[in-house]
Image: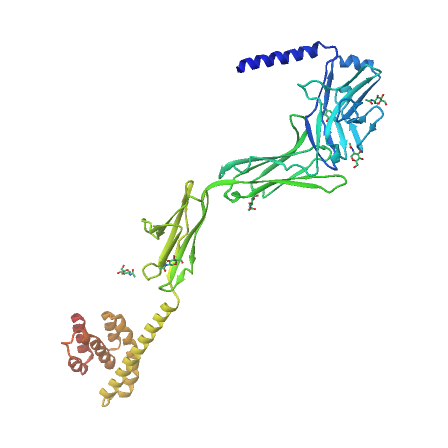
Length: 473
Ligand SMILES: *[C@@H]1O[C@H](CO)[C@@H](O)[C@H](O)[C@H]1NC(C)=O
Ligand SMILES: *[C@@H]1O[C@H](CO)[C@@H](O)[C@H](O)[C@H]1NC(C)=O
Ligand SMILES: *[C@@H]1O[C@H](CO)[C@@H](O)[C@H](O)[C@H]1NC(C)=O
Ligand SMILES: *[C@@H]1O[C@H](CO)[C@@H](O)[C@H](O)[C@H]1NC(C)=O
Ligand SMILES: *[C@@H]1O[C@H](CO)[C@@H](O)[C@H](O)[C@H]1NC(C)=O
Ligand SMILES: *[C@@H]1O[C@H](CO)[C@@H](O)[C@H](O)[C@H]1NC(C)=O
């Protein structure tokens, strides 16, 4: 079936070619089927023609004229008219028309200036080689060849063509080529192309290029390495058409780039804050940029622990002293994963401060009470002593030291202190009493009378007692 059609069409084409070649005056013109012109601008019709024995005919003729017929190939027809006759440069319905091609070189390229809406039509080219060498309107009756050009006039240009289009997604770090083309119907006033949202690494080249039908377009090529920063960026190509009398026209075509990449900029967002009081409902949110982002996985970890705590974009919990510490999350999509920096969740604020104040005050108060008690005790027990006056001052000094020793409960320190102050008995006595006071609570069988007995002893004896008491502890 297909073969049959092919054979038939082959025979048909062959017969047409044979027919035209065998005819004495074969002639044809080549021009685009349609051109789109912009109001207020010009339009160039690229055009070439050929006639059998053109060189001979050219030699025989005195003049060679190009004629453009509007709407009808028959110039006598009432619906159409002769828009241009190069013989006497007659122009009708247009402000200016110029055949810029050299007719002697079979180039019938023509520019129509100051295009208006009513210029939209079919135009036929006619050649007249005078005197009476060749006169014909090109290929009006041959169905298989281009015989006319359709000029379409628009008030605003068509948006530039941008390739590839939106559906295109590219992997991060791959090279992307975008090409933008804007028709240049009037080559003397070609559009200028500009890009917006240009990626950082972009390299752009722009040039005027001929298309297959010989019409011109401005082509701009942009090459860049896809970065995740370019994801969902609307890169657009803008064509600006300058016009002589009217204002410039601007058209633009955007393309939204889809860049595929593994998670980036992963970080934890914490509400209400990273430093909260116990009992606060804290929410940690793992935020990350990735593409695609619909199949994201988030995993939460504690510092130094291999096992994840939980999964999910957000975690919420009531803060206790137990769940403070370092947290981090790992975001993952099908192209890879990324870990966030660790965040430190601390218990801070009113309660912590309050406790510290309470402990501090209680401690100070306790020390003061003890000191006072000791002081009065000394006053009473040493009323008859010779060292009374001196002892009182030094005892006060000693007492402050001893309060510290009592806290650190280090025997060796106490001993060395005692050696240094061997002559001062008050200190020793007071100290041992202090230790006893603590111990009696735990060892109730050791009555305070032991202390009493030792108090009257010399420094050496007291040391012994202290050692005994420590070993009991
Ligand atoms: C073009 O102009 C020449 C000279 O005026 C004239 O002889 C010729 O007939 C014109 N052609 C047409 C198609 O009107
Ligand atoms: C188009 O319209 C203008 C006036 O608006 C007129 O001068 C001109 O002849 C018309 N051209 C054609 C080809 O109809
Ligand atoms: C025809 O002439 C035009 C205008 O001068 C020129 O731009 C074009 O290259 C020529 N075409 C050919 C095939 O020589
Ligand atoms: C990009 O363009 C699309 C459609 O033209 C629009 O919906 C979107 O908001 C634009 N994005 C940005 C970031 O401008
Ligand atoms: C903590 O807050 C989150 C979000 O506001 C809520 O979903 C959750 O139920 C709260 N948790 C408790 C224990 O109130
Ligand atoms: C805190 O941890 C300790 C031991 O690790 C546990 O005994 C206690 O129940 C925990 N408290 C809370 C509120 O989870």
